[in-house]
Image (cartoon, rainbow, N blue to C red):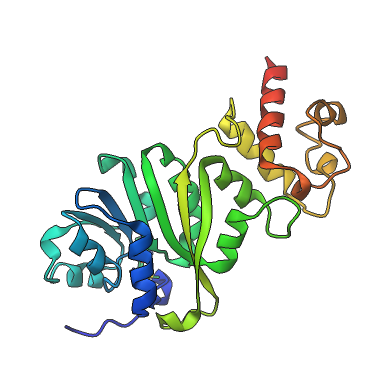
Length: 259
Ligand code: SAM
């Protein structure tokens, strides 16, 4: 088959380490009739072992040359190929609770994770290869440097675990950064339920706007000292010291006050 030249604009770093590939497939634990969606199958490093274990595998790919190639693979009859940008893909168009998998293009990982949060109710679990630094921010706990907006917003929807650290040499071409595999399992209500999710999102964004400033300062247009004190937040504290649960409590307190 014709050699494929990796395209930087599509974040193409192809997995070549067979041990890592089998670790990912083992972590996913696909059962024959599972509904699995792979984001960015590329040269099929993960696609092939997944397809072997499944009756059907949905894949979402943007690169036309790669799509052509996928159609010629010996297991192509098992693939349902969704052509185009995964950021525009309607995950709800695939029926059932989905297992979503991917060695993600790192340039779109944050917007993609936010989009996937919107369909968390239709997800069984997700396993992604991401930049290690991003995974560390996703799983971070309060009072650490990595804890921020991404941690709070994703921990609202998912329980997450860093499963595996992956060095650059495991890919061709090698990325400039270390990578890691994360498992994400929907856990509705784990840190509480926001009455108004859009408000909660705005609040968290504002809280972490300037990390060095106090929560009082960052939230000055949203909450006053009395509001913060009412839910047990010290106005002099910094956003990174405040537990995810407390952001939900504060958002609900403000929503209640508004009516
Ligand atoms: N799964 C393969 C592997 O592990 O070797 C390839 C991973 S590579 C890091 C990312 C893949 O995502 C590439 O196949 C790339 O073409 C595809 N991709 C990039 N941007 C995309 C997008 N917006 N929508 C869908 N696929 C995309």
